[in-house]
Length: 322
Ligand code: SF4
Image (tube, rainbow, N blue to C red; front, top):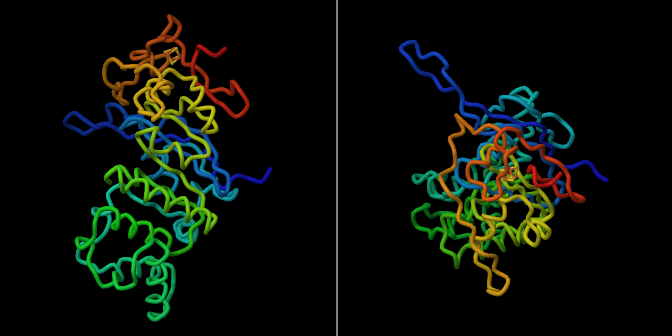
């Protein structure tokens, strides 16, 4: 089988917590605590979990917008955690990000043309005429009109702004797009239009996606495989269908029970999780989910479950699966 486009091994991000009069390190927040996965070329991996579970931190580390504390990130077989700044700049054009809030990520004082020209300049497109031509092409690719180039971000609706964010990510022909909650800020009716656009673009330009969301419902139709994160770790990872049809981890079951499905007869009974997500600066011993798990057993409080393959391609970290 071909080498995956992205392979992540034991990735960690621990933020120091400083305190006292001398500002000494008094602890650390384990935002991401040993995550491993791969993404094949042309596929979409969905990464899902409640806010603060480490999914966005993982996405940012993949682009090295955040430096990992530990672990490796291979892109086309090269460990990008070891690249120099110059080498990283070259590889950056292959990986782009689409953000949750397009309004915050688009400079309000710049026209769309200027916003879309920026990455082209950074990556060496010198001719202004060529850049302007590319900007018009990009606008059409994402379903906008070329006359939109002269407008400012506030003159667009939320869905149109996200289209501009996508056009900006596409500007330099990347191979990988990390989409961090790209539709969470949009109305439900607009969400599916943006999801369809992302799917069409994937087919047309052979793109690979890491699609980050807090809701399993959103990633269902766009993901080939899905990973579920809890307190900085992936607790379940598998092809989409088995994960939705036969979830194994109690946390995945709880998340899924909250997703409304059209076929009411097959809606599983709602699992209400007790308590809040524990602080990543002081995660529980044993299984990190044991303080909220409806199926917790004695050993769960002491022994951390290994993340292992329980069915072909279906990985779970839970003592229920020996
Ligand atoms: Fe629940 Fe125990 Fe499985 Fe953790 S290991 S998810 S506490 S059953």
